[in-house]
View 1 (cartoon, rainbow, N blue to C red):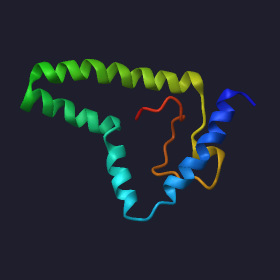
View 2 (tube, rainbow, N blue to C red; view 1 turned 90 degrees about the vertical axis):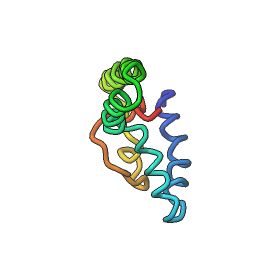
View 3 (cartoon, helix red, strand yellow; view 1 turned 60 degrees about the vertical axis):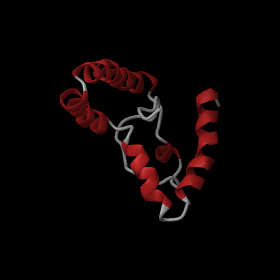
View 4 (cartoon, one colour; view 1 turned 180 degrees about the vertical axis):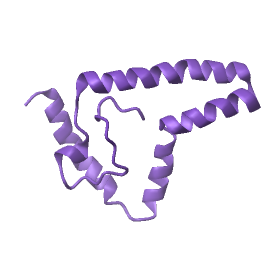
Length: 106
């Protein structure tokens, strides 16, 4: 086993524990997860630009868009599985078709 295989095995336990939390906790976790999606940033950038400050919108866009591109390239280069591809006990919430590492949310 290499380092990444060990990392995948180590992360399965905490993921399964988080997914076993009571029902009312899940919507909170899903809401927090929304803040790391590309869609969230693509909706927020125009709002920031038009309603708050064009300079702030441009600065944030100049960071977010290259970071998203780097994330996509990193996923293609590293070619690492998602946790639910490794262990059937992990529920895909939501199911993603892209590779798992690097995490766009992180």
